[in-house]
Length: 80
Image 1: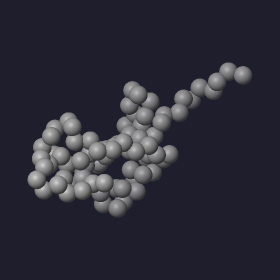
Image 2: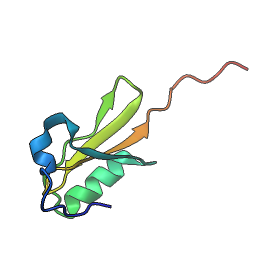
Image 3: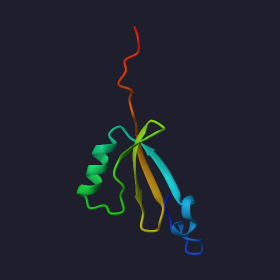
Image 4: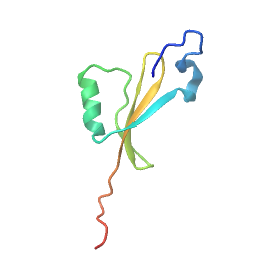
């Protein structure tokens, strides 16, 4: 769905409103390393967020930002 709209304001010109997608994955760190290995530029390092997600974002050449995240599992086991 990332298309070209030559008559529209580019995503990079809209500031904070240029997010396109949030993708939940099972292995966010592995995906990050795969992207790096394949030469993707404009990528942020994965980080743990207060909303219990570990995530990183990439920026497309036209300015859209796509975030990939993985739920942070609690290390506490529930009581029996």
